[in-house]
Image 1 (cartoon, rainbow, N blue to C red):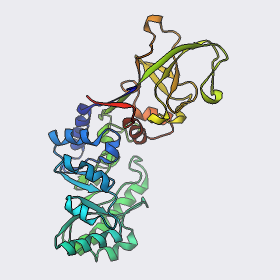
Image 2 (cartoon, rainbow, N blue to C red; image 1 turned 135 degrees about the horizontal axis):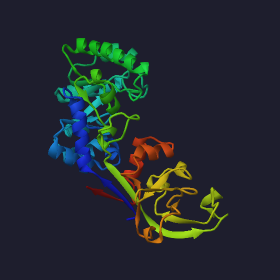
Image 3 (cartoon, rainbow, N blue to C red; image 1 turned 30 degrees about the vertical axis):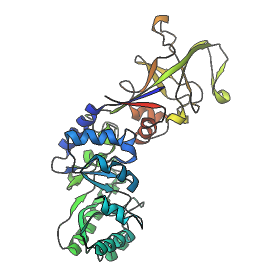
Image 4 (tube, one colour; image 1 turned 90 degrees about the horizontal axis):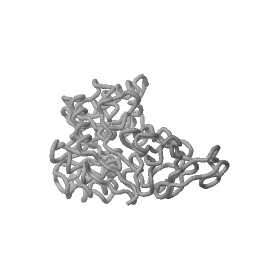
Length: 364
């Protein structure tokens, strides 16, 4: 393989402990959607189950839930709710839907009546995101559809929790408390609540409620500059050098001549491109590292290849050669820095880099 993607289980477990200490009174529910953010859900769940034994995991879709169901006895909650025709699979495989709409509620309630069982669910309220979740004007109809349901949690999701001073955070909190009370009244008892994602855990300890849902924080991705400095990156990525060569002054590199050499320089061509998750905006912008020395990308990132300029002050015996690997993410460059150079976010970058077909994913 031409790309190495190493996942540090030690750092993952350390991050779990950091988050658990930050929210000591709340249940910790890892979010492992999108193949555990590109790190491989199977290995991540096995590691967490063997040491931390989480009570529940969150995924995005029924298909993701079915993939990880054989791996854990923990509860698995599907953020995306359910669609008509999926009811049997949810109940048969002991999966819990986060009911995101009035239609979801009615589907699950009808299924509970049909099989004569009290069925578990989470109720997802939309308090500002305007993506999924029960809308405020649906609360009256929704609270009339709770019979036959075992409501484990009422949840909502921060829109901007990495922005500490954003007034929307407080508005969401106020809406959530008020609306949850309506559901508790209709349900006839108190219902556990959850609001905090990774940045919410760090920035709003008074909004932890009964459960927190870390995603990026588990992988050591910073939510904002200086937030959660104790988190350790779980992913490191390096790419193989295919060729080292020299170009003359005035020569160009790659498609559309985006880089022109001002002086003679040595270049390394790496077996990695945008097909492997290194976004095209990294062209002439981002860096790889050779033994801690930054090497700037020169020219266009192409589908399979990327070219970097090697430092001219390196002696010949310290120069990289074909077959060696250069660091893209690791001790010298956090994924957030690379993401910024690529016009992306850390989460997006990790998903793109961690699960590439040409990457050898190793567990360290």
